[in-house]
Image 1 (cartoon, helix red, strand yellow):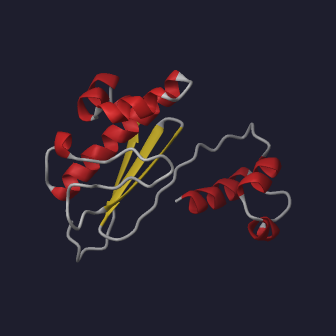
Image 2 (cartoon, helix red, strand yellow):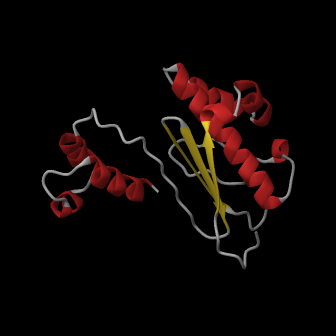
Amino acid sequence: MTNDDPHAALWLVHLDELTMQQAAALTQEADHTRAAAYHRRCDRERALKGRAVLRVAAAQAIGCAVRSVQIPNIAHQRPMLTNKPNAPWLSLSHSGAYILAATCPCPVGVDIEQNTRDIDIGSLAHSVFSSEETKQLATPIGPTTFFGLWTRKEA
């Protein structure tokens, strides 16, 4: 991938494709600390494996070893490479059994959500969408519409 190529490289990985030992070998202490903040074990594993996938994707994009990839953990900030001029943009999302990562020479955002039918979509929609976005929603909205809108907003 070059800066002249605006295409994103996408990595969709099932959690079972990566062991925790592999994830630990591909990540750094800051990644472990960030993952440890999650209360549930499955969320800790998903977070650590997500960072491992993102590091592999970034290393491939810039042509370096995974362990030399520097992606600082800054809360509520999109991941970014700090040790490479003209570094590609990075994006990471995980939900359910999947991790989705992207690298691209231009701004990129990805989001993946598990389509969970046991949530109150109407109430959640009013809490995650602006009043303008809520006005545009058909009533009642179904899971496909809700998650389609939510993933576009998150990405």
